[in-house]
Image (cartoon, rainbow, N blue to C red; front, side, top):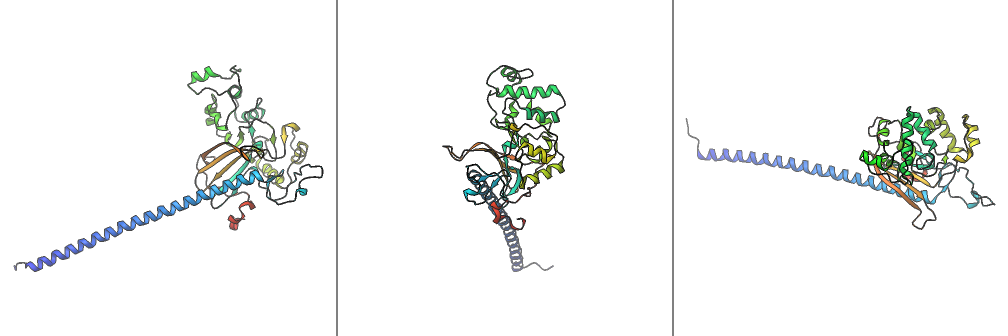
Length: 354
């Protein structure tokens, strides 16, 4: 067998080395390409997230500004530019009839800028929990809790939690009961938010075992029990007034263009066999609201505020603000809500859905 010449061995080594270098170069190029693609993807996502944040912030600030500076009618918030004579009588009385462009204050979902959404709920359309005699709360609890002992405990413990004294009501709870249960002591003051119910003895367990009691949607930390029948959300029209879904939908459509004026008008037009007290209900928006802002993700921002147009600290005062995961009735993250109503406030952002 002929011996391999040194030149042939050298050429073989060079070829192998070249192939290895090319392979390494291809691998390096692939890694670099993947790195660049990953960075581009992250940058694109970061840009989209930033745009969502800008859209959400712009939406929230616009809503806050217009909520504080726009005129109200019995239907909601209007943006119509009118001469003062169009809504003030010669006697100086406010004309509350709807204009036709109102943004509803019953928690209806609206589309904001970009992929942001929002809703405005007048708190006078919800059930107040910071009141001495929470008849409406009792009524709602009775619909989901058959045990009268449990119902009495819930109400008595809530009243003991917010009253100024340390006297214990029948079925109630005060300082010693909280110490025995290893819980934070009652504040003996008004609840700052609805979520503070979780600190009231027994309420956390009851709320978690009764998900059908939609406390985040139904309750408010107001100190006034007068309710506005023009801004009750659909779920309360069904739960509080006992309407079926079809009737609730019809009533909501009716009050957009022809909102209720009095209790007598409400009973006559709805046909409800009810003996409603005139002083317990109102029909013009209040100055307390709960705003919700969210985007395409599952996170939502909740703001509770009070309008103070003549206040020394500004046109509104925020009671609380927090973030929460939007979930549906199956405890799953809700898909992005499609606007049930469109508003001219963000008309340029609505596109074909306007």
